[in-house]
Amino acid sequence: MSHPVIEAHNLGKRYRIRHQSSTHDRKLRHAVTRLFAQPWKIFAAAQAGKAEDFWALREVSLTVNEGAVLGIVGRNGAGKTTLLKLLSRITRPTEGRALLWGRVASLLEVGTGFHPELTGRENIFLNGSILGMTRAEVRKKFDAIVDFAGVENFIDTPVKRYSSGMYVRLAFAVAAHLEPEILLVDEVLAVGDLGFQRKCLGKMDEVAKGGRTVLFVSHNMASLRSLCQEGILLNDGQLVYSGSMESTIENYTNLYAAEAVGHTYQQQPAENPETKAELLAASICNAAGEPAATVNLTRPFSVAMTYRLNTAASHLIAVVEICDTVGTVVISTTDIDASDLHGKARPAGIYREKAFIPPLLLMPGAYSINAYVIIPKRERLVEQKQLLRFEIVDHDSHLSQITGVSRPGYISTPLQWEVNYAKS
Figure 1 (cartoon, rainbow, N blue to C red):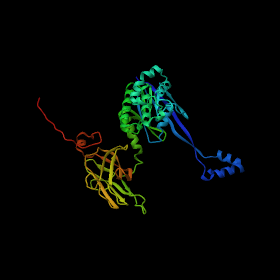
Figure 2: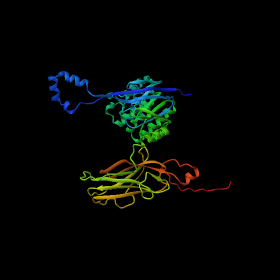
Figure 3: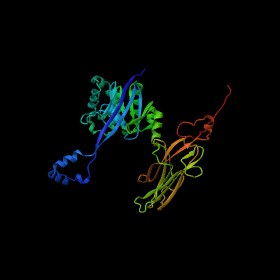
Figure 4: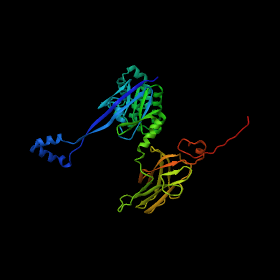
């Protein structure tokens, strides 16, 4: 039976934010004059400077058992990194306490724990000693660390000369291979290339299966789903949900759904436009061509957009991206997919376009729209992310009528099958 290796009780971290005085008061000449004329007023003003408390984390209590892989989600500024810094003893809590059993390795930013003047080899041994390992233990893991990081040609070079990618590869390799009982990993993996990210996820999975505990902060929901069984959701420094990783992600997306824009967008054209193009309107339209917040899975729908081109342009294309609830692009289409517009000059004026989405293409669920007007490889004239939100609902699909459920995944399109029967 597993036992707790991390216990946090009412953990909180407060910072004091001081606000500058007015621009007039900050002028050097004015300050020097007041210093000589009325020095006591300078002191009084300094004492009366405005300041306020900011709680980066407040009243967070959690228990993590041995061998658990815990995903931590929340918007930027929710307190995720602060929580990991408190658990790794990088900073002290303002209130509450955290108890950890076992060696802790943390990777919270590029090169955490590295000394820039030391070589890669020296930093490996330094980190090993910080974790309480002997030189013999580190030497046993040394070749595996260097091979994983792919920096064998630069292992005797000071790490201050490493690129950010090399830095993070070596830092992660050290953190994962020196056998800590607890591994804390922040979004720093986003620095690495795609191949290295896959290696990191595989290594964290291996670490977890070895009975060690992993706390993983990421905005990549696919990685969290594949790696983590449990999750917690932080919002404004407080723990607002704890449960399975899938339900945590669902609560995360629902939490911010209310802040999203609707299914229509309208903008008055500028009287004296400074841009080459401007988006005037956009909407989700149902099968009848009417603006709608929900569309039926078994009916076609369209994404309409109106933009004004203020100057003539060539090689222009309009792009519509349909994204899932966490911003991953599910499908992308452009107005040159089914036309011969590419390369032709488009005169200044107002353009009204529609992208038609066939029925039974995307699974039921919530989606958002990104809209662009671009000249490929040159410039983006219009860039609107999370412009619209809508939902696909399943009222009468063949599968739902038979089974009562929808098929999992993103794509709903039925595929061709061949069924042969042979009597035994």
